[in-house]
Length: 233
Image (cartoon, rainbow, N blue to C red; front, side, top):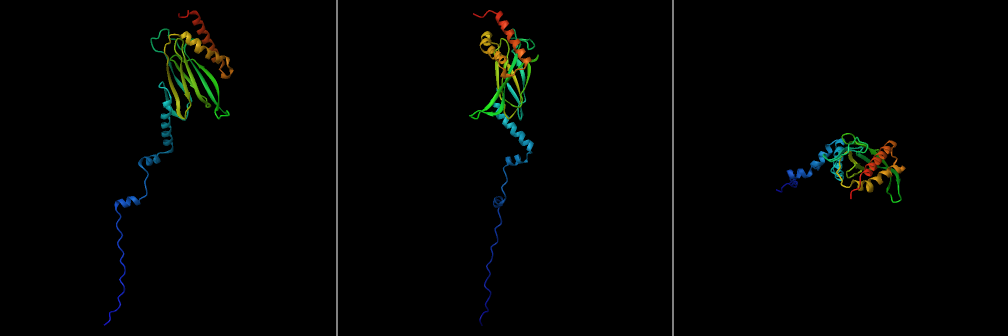
């Protein structure tokens, strides 16, 4: 008897392999690295603080060791102390008319440029007399981008602090430690006196009348003292 036609065998489907842990990790969406996750978890204020702190640390390398700073969007004040080594003979007192002075040259940015693209800076000047402890405080207007501070005391070498306004560096604390100079007469007549007299004569520095009078009296007193002393051979 002929056999009945049996249905053709159906193809069997192989069971799908079970994913291994390595395959599961490869198929999973990539997660950001740990540092990126921690950064994303920070708030906006914390991110700004970290960025400012890092920027200030980089830019503070441009400051001299006598200068300390706080982190901030910009510098509003330069404060500090003018000190003279103890035991210095004839050390001037900050309260005396001819004692130490702080002379500041401030350079204001104008929204005008030269033909080569460089900014126009307009200078002004301030003259400060430190307090009894040698303390001083200088306010920087918002348009000041640079400041040069001269720390002056009779019989001592003048110290210069050059400051460029920088984002991320807040208020500055500067300690000026002046050193005794042997030839004060030469230092005064060749370096200091011409600069300080120019501050009084040049109107562009817009020196305050009271500060102009203070500087004029200081120069007159130094001239009288040096005139009464015979020059060293």
